[in-house]
Image (cartoon, rainbow over all chains, first blue to last red):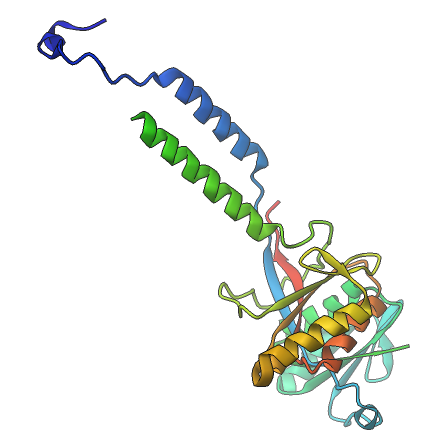
Length: 139
Length: 130
């Protein structure tokens, strides 16, 4: 195997030789493994809310009239006491947000409604840049 | 050459394993709701953050450990007490399944407020790469 040019190192018996073929095999196996198991992570978002304290004193307070009161019902939404559909809620909220985005949104969520629907409302608030959100729960 | 390849492989395996650990602290069975307009999660989150998961059936878990409501209350109250003045400002992240009833999520929020924690946020999927 030894070429002529390497004759002068003939005394060097322990020759370093890396057999590439098995290594490439292993590396390819690893590559395939990673390609198969690779999954892209979702981009996550956070929706910050505030929660009224559970004290009995505070829960008796009636919400001030200048708040945007949104109710998430089991099948539908309501804004300031008027029941509306999802699209109507979005447009109404957009109109209210155009006045001021500093307003507090009081979201009252029905126990039986799904969590995804509450997030839908919170997402609407986020899209209209309403950041003062309080979530209440009720029957 | 051979020892170097050995070391490099060991390093690859080490990094692969540690990268997996980060992801595995959350349950993969929770279908997070979509929220395309919400602000994106910050890269650097508060190291004190407690992530509570609520699955479709209402099971509450922290770091893959299932907890009952009373146990959760005990854990949170103790954590808040341990941090002293900085206790109530511990951020809470709730990973609630989109199909879970609000009552399940509400229980978790109630326990948080009872323990004095007020920084509550819901986690949702902003953008998923399919």
